[in-house]
Image 1 (cartoon, rainbow, N blue to C red):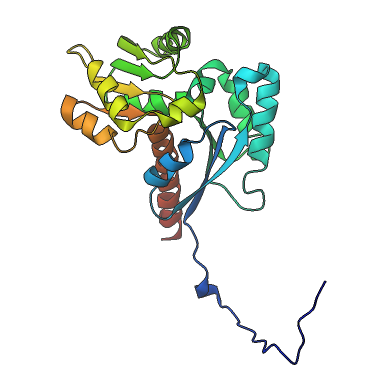
Image 2: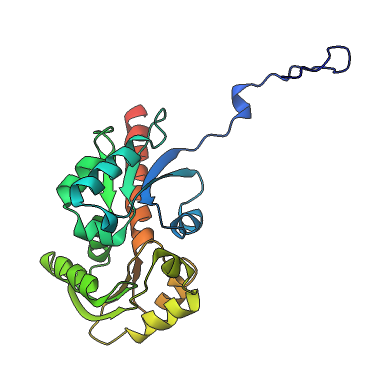
Length: 250
């Protein structure tokens, strides 16, 4: 390898001090699908300043067995910022969180970090519905009718009634990530009805961040997105943890 001549180059050592380094107050990890090209754009707009997010990818659950998928998630989670602490780690696949066994999924996320909060979209969405004090929803998914029905049944088991459901039956994660905000807006508005107390939009690849406020304004009801609820659940935990640390020090 060529080396610069000491006679030609004027070297200068530029020392740094601790104040030169910016640090985030919290780190949140997201295990995302290898085929999802939409969620990171969502996260950039949803995760608040002062909190950093980090992603690791796993193959889609639909391409392997459940046991193989859980092993892939465990590996992806173990690689997440491996030498730094995480405040929370989340599995950011809406459909996978309803299909895979929740206990085993949490175990896969916590395998290398048993003391870190592990969250799934299913948990976060159900919590968001509860926090809004509603139990009857309209549901929008990009999935087929069968998968949408499975999600409805899972929500019903948690006391949530889906009074109206719309499915787009998109063929790939690329189509889902490419769906225009205008089409998401139109689809959500078409599902509003007097019996529905909130609109839930699932799939973390959907680009919903820019239209959720407009949908909520037009229908006058809460609008709950998969990525939005996932981030909010993690942030609530981070804020509670920070409050506990402050109260302990004072």
